[in-house]
Image (cartoon, rainbow, N blue to C red; front, side, top):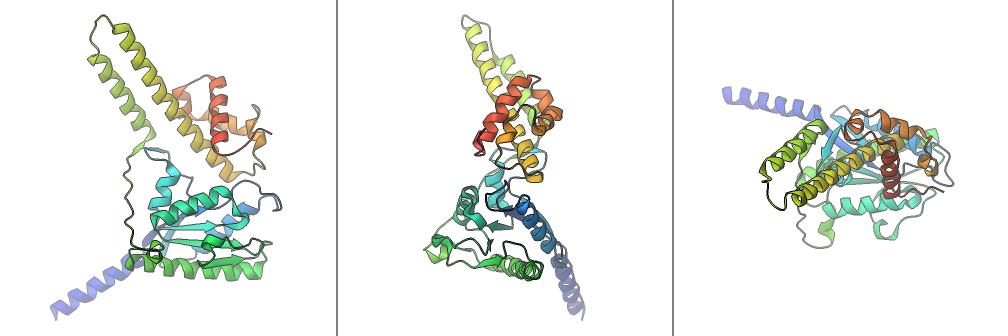
Length: 298
């Protein structure tokens, strides 16, 4: 009898854990304005997805773009780490955005659970046409969007439960593969800076005066500068991605203007201020970041 009661309590505990299970869901979808689509279209699609996932009773779903991260520095690139580690990734292949297709390929290579979305104006991509897609109307008609939201909830629930039982979500159809794990280290930004400066002080103490002292000092200073420059660029990259995710930037060319609001965001950031006060340098780093993201100044 005691054993039955204990088992009953254990089952109730398991059900409670299921009800409060947290799911981290990453979004891979176009961000910038796409020719042929209304301004703000992708923001509307994102809101629809977020609304659908907020209606779960069994899970507490945390959904965000894979390019978004908390105020921290990841040794590995934020996007790759999120693509690998998120419980589920939802990918909208509408308009066949090159960045989206690349990031989908990375998720497939990691053999981690995912869900595909596509609007009714986009043709199927041959290589993934055999994978189930949730289709939705490009004009976001209310009746059909309600149906799409219901499909998304059912698909997410089924995909997650399936991922708990099966080791392979995609690659099993092509053979036997072993996906390598990603090793990562996560530190709050200020802890990261403090560690860097501690390393700098240690290196200074280890430098002994000799005939090549000036040369060693130069090499050290150059190495330190490169570390700071990389941290600065990574920080500005996060700020720019956050701005793009929350604002319509069109083709992105205006972001290169020295009078654009995104530069104000960068200048006001406390971490950026701690790394440099050279506004000319900040603009150059911003230009490099925008170039890395695929934007052009014209």
